[in-house]
Image (cartoon, rainbow, N blue to C red; front, side, top):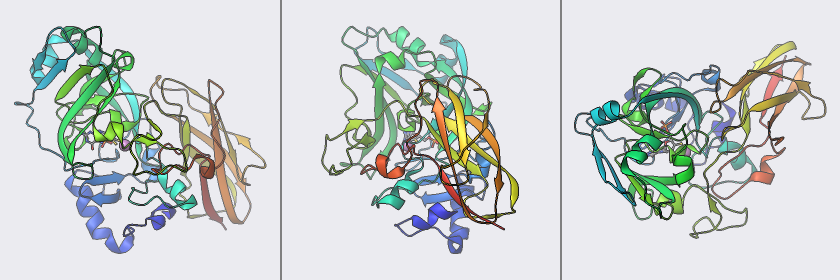
Length: 382
Ligand SMILES: Nc1nc2c(c(=O)[nH]1)N[C@H]1C(S)=C(S)[C@@H](COP(=O)(O)O)O[C@H]1N2
Ligand SMILES: [Mo]
């Protein structure tokens, strides 16, 4: 895939196939998974694996900042503390017995999804060159975070809910366990879950088993895996991944300077082309173009257009109805492709009338987050 060639840090190429597969196999992934890093494990599926509403566990992207911890479900405990009337110490059985179960189909996307297209504009050193596959959708089952918080009774000063996990990120400064927070208002929303099941199976270790947070509509980083502590507090989490990483900085900001820009939470409308595969060759004539679009934060994609000439002329795609408020939607269109080198691009609108920005250059930022510009792929038409 073309975007992998842009990797600055020892690009993955077919010569490293054996190692790629070893990383994928270790975490139960399909062996055509694109492994950006084996330790910590970071991998995305090939675009074709993103075609269904639900992403199978063996194709679901993996984003880790530290070693994946082995957490024993029988000894796992969740501590709820901070500005609450009653501190809680819950086992997995407590969660299952004391609160009503809730199932939600939700798309998770990393804020770094589609970063490779930003890196092509201007390099972003030290960051993973994610293609369009750092996004996946599953059916999550667990309990509402709101129900657990209600049992603890948030006190009047509580405004943020912070999550703690056991995996230590050496990349953080100083090295520390992963964590983050969401505003209390979001934490009390029905869609936010403490999930122990993914697509009807126990939550795999790699995806946060036994229990993870699922925050639909927010950047993936807030869906903290292996969560073992929930703290109600007046301020956002002081964890590195809330205060320094996962911030949107203005283009001219110094990424090493703390406090610039703002912490990301809700996601913005994005889309990608998943077929044809970028960089491949296709036969001239009518060609099906397939993609996903994700309005995020509870919105709906209402229109997608596709162009074979860089945006001079457009064909309206047909867009799947959303499976719920928290999922991506797939779209498809037929383009009549003339022979030669061709760029296919797309643009999506959400129900608030927001449309994707045209160019990655206008959304470029020093840490490479939130690229939601028009997706573009090149194919050779023969
Ligand atoms: N404990 C912990 N939770 C975490 C992370 C992590 O490194 N450690 N990565 C976060 C990020 S940045 C993303 S995008 C999602 C990825 O979830 P997945 O690996 O199940 O796809 O998990 C989030 N939760
Ligand atoms: Mo992420």
